[in-house]
Image 1 (spheres, rainbow, N blue to C red):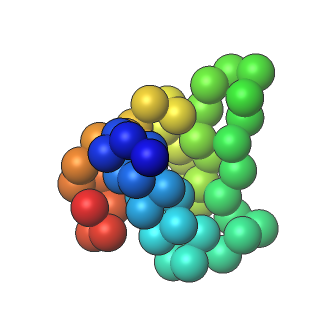
Image 2 (image 1 turned 90 degrees about the vertical axis):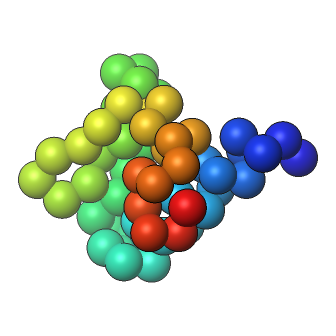
Length: 54
């Protein structure tokens, strides 16, 4: 597994655990990670520091 993949999985895992599975979604068509009242591009998941998990 690449380091980028590990970072993305850790960030996604943290979001799901912190916000709940019902409040986090990946919209593949738009390339958006949706959570809470907003979101970010899916690419943000591979950024170190996106969540406290990384």
